[in-house]
Image (cartoon, rainbow over all chains, first blue to last red; front, side):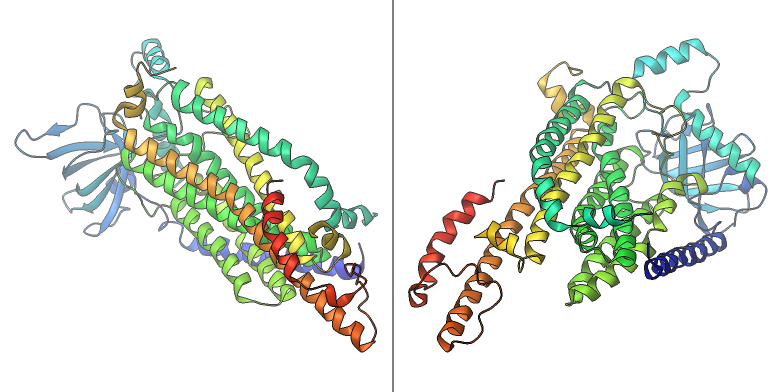
Length: 164
Length: 244
Length: 103
């Protein structure tokens, strides 16, 4: 490799390093804003802004879903293991919305601590398995929250709580 | 270190000759793999316990997303070679890879949107994974447009190489976006260090599809590169003999 | 086969629209990638041939003026330059390129 090429190689590396550092700094400055949602613990601790539109995400607490018989109004609690928040919503819920599953709700957090959602999205994890396998895991661990596959979302939320 | 082998590797005529031998194999193997993988995934894999049958989109979505990112990495590598060694073949590769990469990037975004609707309840969210993937699409389009805007081959090669290199910082952002931030998009199913979080009867067709898509990309790239060689080397004797 | 019936396969448990539209789009992208190089090849070969013919004519003119011939006039096969009109060449160009395009 001759001197000219070596010089060009160094230039290319410098260019990459420079852009890399610039982007890293930018992402560091934006680190909170890039989060798609706040966790219930953050909301409970007052880390999340009230009165402005934001997203809250967590697992639907089993047994907390209360549906209105007359309308599409529904109320449920979401949890990340460290905190809980009540969500009110009116509309059609996604198919994947079940007790114990992960959700991300878009709306505003009131001063009363109730999250008024205008949109509810289902978050699923990266585990894929046939229903029989899932059933077998259920039978082996009867106490496990359902659906068991969502354990990763739960873990994710917990590590987020520990980390921040 | 002796770098002459490297320059020999960059000879368009050498590449044209050798790639002609690979092509039929690439064509047959990639198409067979894709057909087998997709039929397996569509008709023979069990449904998912949570998502039912809509998860079958994974057999296109994941290979397309992998390719969209890998093609960009290859373009950045070709860009570095273009800038440092001024090897013509590297710039030709950079040029012909861009339209293939853009097609798989669009495929990834579209299948992701189609999959998002039944599972998440929305076509699109501005989370870090989806947004960084959209930026990748714009980078691809930018590189293609830049080459179209500059008429001298030399200057276009340099400009495209620099843009490709600068854009490569987006690739680790796409990869780690699901780990660094709370995204709606789930984490990686296929991991290098851990066991994949997928049942084997779903994993096998997925892996086959990934290999099939990569081979398909190589095949299309070789096809396009051979044409680019003919076009740029048209003044040389061997191309004239080839064409006439 | 995972599905019990053909209609069950098409319905995909109610997700048929999503699954099939995703696969249809994938098929379109793969087809585009497969077909476009062959279209491009035809165009490029046509371009190179046309340029070759233009070069020929220039060579012919040079020969008449008895100036220095171009360095690679290897394509100048005919003994009588005036007979080397490009018309017959163009006629054979069409079918030939079509024949050549599938590898």
